[in-house]
Amino acid sequence: MSQARSTSRPNRTGGSPVIPQGTPAENAAPAVVPFADPGPLGLAAFALTTFVLSFANAGIIPSAGAAVLGLAAFYGGLGQLIAGIWEFANKNTFGATAFCTYGGFWLAFWYLVSTKGDVAAGGQGVGIFLIAFGIFTLYMTVAATRTNGALIAVFAFLTLTFFALGIGAAANSTVLSHIGGYLGIITALLAWYTSFAIVTNSTFKRVVLPVFPRA
Image 1 (tube, helix red, strand yellow):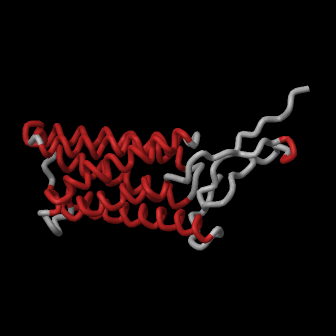
Image 2 (spheres, rainbow, N blue to C red):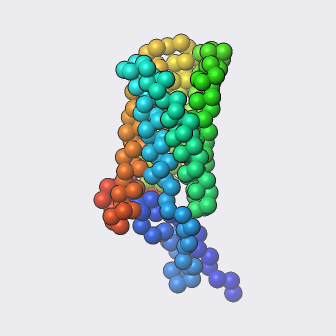
């Protein structure tokens, strides 16, 4: 008779992996996590880079657009790629897909702006670039409904951010671009909270800040 296999998933509150309901604990092999949770790093890299750029997009600090280039390459880009690779090692498909994709987004953004590709592409070229990432973020929002409330909020607001910025760029609408900037600031704050909650809960070995688990 075959023995039941464990399909445990990581607990984003920093606790031990959770054994799915219906799987006998005595038959479940202990989960071995080779790395610490890379989620807080990936979320922090995403949040900080998004926060700085969003001040330019909102028209609050226009020069922030130039200041963000180094962050886009080394923190938002490489930082999230590293976090995504760790998520692959931790067998977290959602985290790996999200962090590697957004790390790639920031590297592509850095290249686009630093080579003046955004000027050559024009508003419609930049718009479809952003809308394409909005489509990716939209289906990741659907997948996020099985994670926790904090991540759902991050992905929902990021979806709105990408579409507002993309349509704003394509339609040459300053109003929509500014709305996208403000939505980006909210997204960054939500991502920072989620990063803060995960790393704090992990450090304190208990739930200090809730992330509102869904699955």
